[in-house]
Each structure stands twice: as structure tokens, then as C-alpha cells.
Length: 220
Image (cartoon, rainbow, N blue to C red; front, side, top):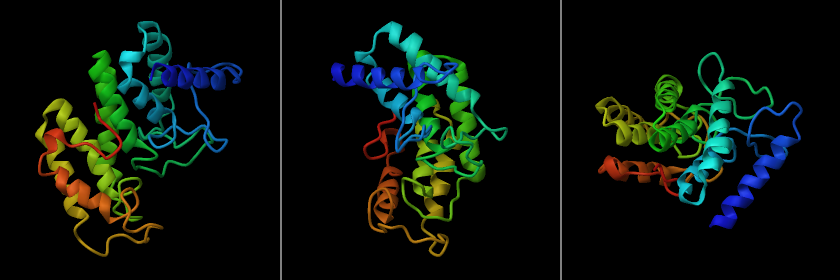
């Protein structure tokens, strides 16, 4: 595991050193784009690295991870949402894979590790954006649908104990039970991350939200 973590860090260091002037301590490329979201972007990689914190040195946490977390916060739109990449994307996506929903998990985890209030503030601000803009019409799935967005509230409920986050999670999952609200049929309508299987998973998680977690994406 240590070798994997070191390889990831080295990849992120090399990618950002190509930028002149250097803007961040870590950045990663996928499909020749520098994505920022939870699925294949910087926040998702940082989340994985934070979960593997026992394999990180204090120097790596303080001089690589924290500066990258702080850098992401400087990229927010005026709305507070995060772009999907460094390619001047429009402020449209509020979902787990791109935008505020997935990024909120990373800052919730960062707060739990560093106990820096600005990270908790960021996580809650991202979750508020999900509450305002996260009822998507493209599908109910986990990746870019409403059930996936519900987990932004579940993780903050686990972290803070605030009842409003449990209420918001329940409202989002309940919204998925009303047919006819999605305008697009996913490519894989019965899959876990694209289709109704993800909704089923979220419904089951609502039975015990204190221990819930997205499949394949641990919160803490």
C-alpha cells in the first residue's frame, strides 16, 4: 500500500511541476484533462490519500495534501460550486462525480483528520449547494443522480450529528421514488452507479444512516 501511495504522490507532483508558474502541490490528468471532482479528479484522489493517511508522513500531509486541498477551494465559482476540470467548464454540474456533491465528502474527511474549521465550513457549503441544486433530472443513480447526491448529507450527518442533514438525505432518496422525474434513461439503467441499483442501495442505507457509505467510496 505504501508503494501505491508513493506512486500516486509522485504522479501528482510531476503533473503539477509542468505548470508554469506552479499553482498547486498536486494535480492529476485523466483523458488529458485535469479533472477536479470525486470520480476521476483531484478531490477524489485526495480523498483516497486521506483514507490511507497511515501511509503518509507528516511532511506529506502538511506540504502536499493540505496545499492541494486549499488550492481546490480557490477554484470555486461565485456560487461556491467547484468546476469539473481546469478547462473553464460552465457552472452546471452538481453531482457526485463532478461538482459540489462529491467534493463535500473530501472536505468532511479533511476536517476529521486536520480539525481545521475551514474544511468543515467548505464541506457544509458544498452540501448546501447540493440541497439547492442537486435534484437532477438526468437520473436517479449514484454517479450523476439524486441518490448519489443524498450521500453528501449522510456523511455530514455522521460527522456533525445535525438532524438537518438526515432530513435532507431522506428527502432526496424519497424524491427518487416518484417515477417520471428523470428525463434521460441511463446507458446502464440497472447498474449500481448509473441505474436503479444505486437507488436501492441508498434506500437500504437510510435504514441505518449512522453507518452508511457509498459502495466503493468510504467516507471516513
